[in-house]
Length: 342
Image (cartoon, rainbow, N blue to C red):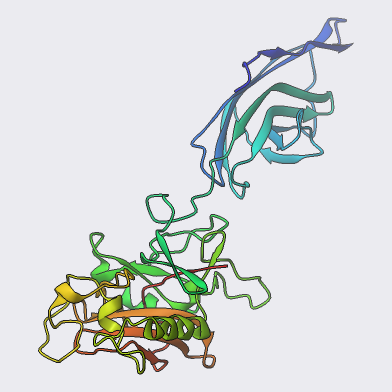
């Protein structure tokens, strides 16, 4: 952080009706930026003016100018803030970038700038909800995350709304997430619109990226590639390398409702998770905002549409021995999400 300087301007111009000179003394102090995140920061400063024998200047603006280059001016980004002790939060900054800021005042008497202060935005998290990278494993030609998505912003830092109200959830055509049962101790579930980065209702607006840098939401075909690799690599519960019997190998060792069906996930869970894909039965949120099947099912979106209403997904069920592929749940549903390396 650069040393803070007090910048004082004394401007003498013209005289009043008695011949006393006009003295205009603006003092601008740029203070340290606070509350710095990956994409935002709060700018702070003080602007005080001593004016003697002067007419009130016209066209006055004041606030901050900032840039990624030193000595920002009014030619750079300008944020107007009124008052003496001024403060404002700027959004849309670039992660891991140094910015330079100065308080400014401009009017018919001139342009005035305070001292320059620099700050650097935080690095963008590239992984899970605690900021650590998502753990991942290579399966054949693919690298998959082995922990469910749990972040609440798109890649550029834009917030993905949390929606708890059932009616609001039902009417969504943009991205949202919720905790299972709206309980913060439970996992996060995302509608398909969030997965695809659909953040507003304008069809001409580019979609955001949901996955962290270097990753993407798997397509339906990429899920099939994973399935075929696990089958061919002997992850069927009976050791065979044909047919789809890989559910136990993908499911976690705990949390599933019990089953007596041969080869089912819920039958002797100690034998689960030989692939370390580690799927927990986190259930889903349906079109109407209700929550179902925690302990029984895990659902995962793909990025592949069937049509304007439906998209392909995969799911595991405690009574099944196979990974299921399906599409008959609307895009409003809240499912879990995994990522594949670009």
